[in-house]
Length: 445
Picture (tube, rainbow, N blue to C red):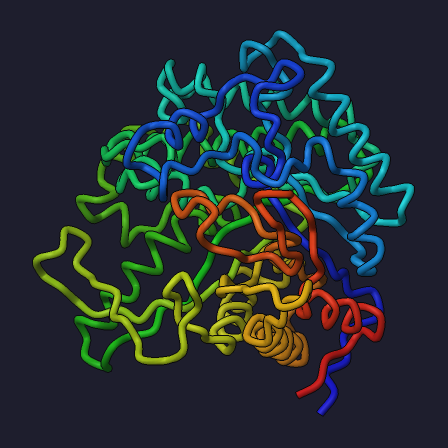
């Protein structure tokens, strides 16, 4: 069966600055929290860092040529705040700004739409030293940084994304401490959430008031929450998980409030003391689209002894190299629930993909599992469109293998293989298949 997508459907690929750029001390770039975290022994697999990564900073023309060859229509990249100011705040670094100007120019000349993310986790370390996102002033610095980038690239970037996965940055970085900045503190986590949301709202307001012609939104990592059983406690547990991971970010952006279920728990009680008058109105700016990063679902059961009152239940289904369950229909379910709860806002899948073990054979990479993964998720997306969801585009994660945060270079998500010794790029079978999907605008079972 053929699954034909709408004519104007936007097929893209995504990366992030710290994961691909390298050139960590080049042209005035200052250290980020990920430079610090990755260089602290014990934090990252085998002590891997993003110092070189894919060397995209020096090889961006080669990479853009590859994007064009594959027929990819939009490239989602992130801007490294650490390249834009030498003090993280106000002292401009023209060389850093010029890199992104040149990248955007190269994309446009090759017929590829530039999609820019302003924050993909690489906060300048100098700002972390002043409290990081738990410091409300960081939101002010962010809005200034955004204004600089809007003025530098405003008319050439078709879509702006304020934040990538604020939930992961808040929880994994500041509550669990397994990502940068490596903190384990609930109050810091709460302040981090609120100040990022505030910075998002102020940035959207600034962009809209500046009369730029592009679109602006935010990208959230979202998963549907299934219950382990039909008993009431498990249903409540799934609602808590939904509240913490999904609604804690969806609700303030789209409804102007944090979810009551979380504010009434110990986990969220202090939020009421952090919110200042007018904050929620600021956060609740009208966005042009919502970006969704989807990788898997959560299956939840009640656990009285867990401070959050729930556990995630591992499933026996097929898993990726990250240990994540392969569950394509969760994407359809998620998209439909967003339409039901938040209305007909335009949606984009800003990340979806899978890590698998890739072994080159005679200069080729036959990554059949990744191709199957993407195909089945594309089909789930098309089913959601057929059921009335306003899905406008799909960015595969990732354009190329890269630095996978705390997993270092051990996990490969790319549709293009990167040899980390030579930095040579090799197009995988999944990329060849994706190029055909884009060309024909359909996939089939």
